[in-house]
Length: 236
Image (cartoon, rainbow, N blue to C red; front, side, top):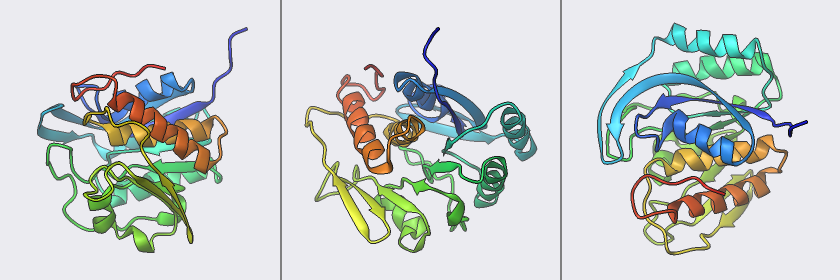
């Protein structure tokens, strides 16, 4: 018999370049040997160097995708990326917790694209109690006011001027620091998507949060060093 894999779900947008969104998430899940499935929230018109527009799927269609896949499978971990609004996010969170009250939701708060397109210009009132971990960068941290949120925070240091690439995991009063192990890296489109999906993947495999974050950090460092273009190669 073949190996058994944990099932994991991503709820995010579709990026034609494959660098970000559900395609990047599924690539990451496959490399980590968890079985990835996806609910699409939007179709974007973009590539690694430019963003044209976002076409949001009808919210009822998003929920129909979600409800149908939840009727078939039980998930312990779900990664959420691009969503239309805080209201949509909160409805999704409610559905997920009805499905499994102990579910671990990893939210990568994509407030703008790496090429500068803003998805959300207003404050997002999020039901933090239903999120296990949020993974903002420094700019997203300020917009979301994560210092007052009621969940764990993995703060990405990719935009830090004085500590570039140094990430921090905040769990209550505790703080854990993750430093990059390589310097031969280049910027990649969708690296934040990959990081959050890697954390989710390792959690689905049974790793505790601290080790899941450490291994995910190493995975992202590996894809950043995979080539000199903005589109990462996923390999183990």
